[in-house]
Picture (spheres, each protein chain N blue to C red):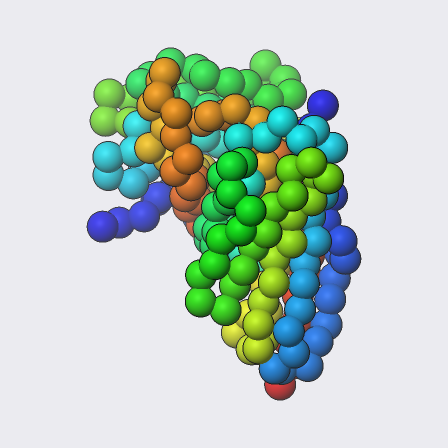
Length: 112
Length: 117
């Protein structure tokens, strides 16, 4: 059974700091991995999707990496801003088009 | 284009009642999935539907059921509500096609907040 773990559970940083969020998964046979952002009481916003054959993906200040062999992914946020405050969730897909298995998220607070 | 839309946004029910939640996918998306998110946890998979067929079911009791319509919209039904059913119910759509490899991301709606009294 696939299990996804995110560390840390919560993180508080001053504005402008670069930071890394971690995601690990127990079964390396994944099809892809997706990072999401969730604002309080809201749905999930897709940030980045990394295919199993890729090592990283970038979008603006966000960079996600994937190491399938070690069962790990990281989300790097450069020059953090208060507007980045949210819960960040990673999720893996085992086969094409199948269910997402989520971690419990990292709650990020960026202080002005 | 409109994103994934869910209705209602909030719902309050009492134990033993039944509830129906609705989801309209992004135009052109044929796959709809449902997830339950309890406060402080990651979403848990409930169902996936593609072309009106159930393609996956999570570890939820038979009180949970769903269906997909010809226009690809979907309903999630929960019978005999329990206090533990209180959660945010999320719908996601994607371009996944049966027999076709897809690395398209899943897109989520804002969810329906269900509270059981």
